[in-house]
Image (tube, rainbow, N blue to C red; front, side):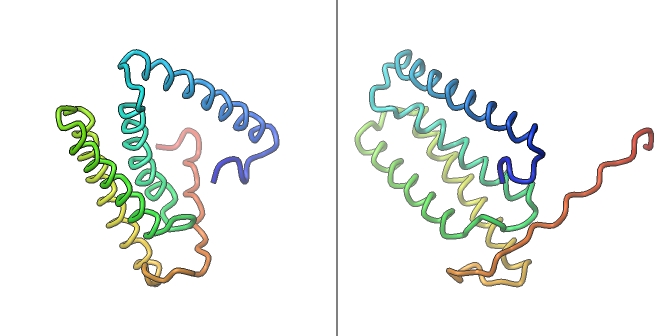
Length: 149
């Protein structure tokens, strides 16, 4: 959901932090490629893919709804990662670290697909329907009062 719903000051802070994160990530990817002599971007791309798979799950858990998420996106992401993993296995069978990351990605993607399927069903909708009605996430739980335990 990003900066939506934030006060103006928080929105500007969010934008600055996001820009800084993109710059730092770009520098880190460049340095990782140089250090590992990874001109194909295999290590950095795979590591990013593990993070994206985990982020899908975290987003679903935090939102407590399927708002902005799709079963088809999860399936397509898994299929793309699976094909990239098979390609790596065929061309570079000795890259054990990268191959282990592809296994992690596959497991995380399968977990996400199962979770989003169940979430959409719990909302009374068909996970296979292409144009599902808009889902409104539940209101966040109120913060506990200060001083109460």
